[in-house]
Length: 427
Image: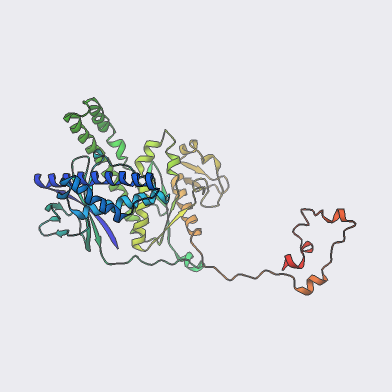
């Protein structure tokens, strides 16, 4: 099982220069190979495979000798990424690949000849050497690759891809009714006011990281906009903006990771969530910033791989299931809770069973019920359809038509009757 670990690295000045040159060279090569792909397609109506891109790299090294200072395996990984991106575009799985820009940060991957030394706390990569690193948790498994990322804020990270040799726990493809009744299903209602409300009573608060640093980010962005484009002062101001954005991202990711870890470590066998239309929700200009700050897509992504590792089932209920509007006790649907105006109603009383519900708690209970109903069932025995025998067909009465004009007129009620079916059509 492959697992990625992100560790902070602190290179020396000489190592930092090598890392920046390697990242810039890989970015330069990516753009050159992508331009080569476009040229091949425009002239020959095809895309160049990976081996053809590797041959083109040799020609680029002769034209630009400084490319020889970078690890050749990192360049081969660049050609693999370009070929994969272009092929995905032709297969309509992804959009057209874009050219990389320096302002978005550089990265390069080292697939071989990398080592970890936990005693000395260093990461070794080819042509750069041992880089001081901070291992904040226990890392197990065999090292597969190391990706060095240069952040816009000026920091450096190493993404360690480790293989622990284990396989994902196997899950049954379907369940019988007795097994489903014994399963512990946990419903999770994601929201803006609270990050998540669970059917077992737990509540995970929303840290609202973007709002927390909103004033500081606004002040830094205002100072950045006043600097002269292309100047050193503008570059320094951009680094300050990137540092605030990194704090916002780290604060949000920390809260989501802690929540998804607790959910995956719970006693529940099945975790049920909603299929939210995040793209459509972002069109609401009053709530767009708050919805983007919660990051519903990241919550679902983390739950998918963490539940798979723990042997739990993640069920995504249909998008249009009225979980908030339906009473979890009697099943009555209360329509006033629907829409933007319904968000103001936090507690409501069911007009049928007169149960007072908290909006989010009731939704989590309904999600748990819908998640249990959505589990795949074992196919039972199919009862054969009763059909008339040959003797019954011969004894069945036939409709007598008075004339040929009325013979072709069949009513909708008689259209499904078996007396109008011939032996060929009924057999």
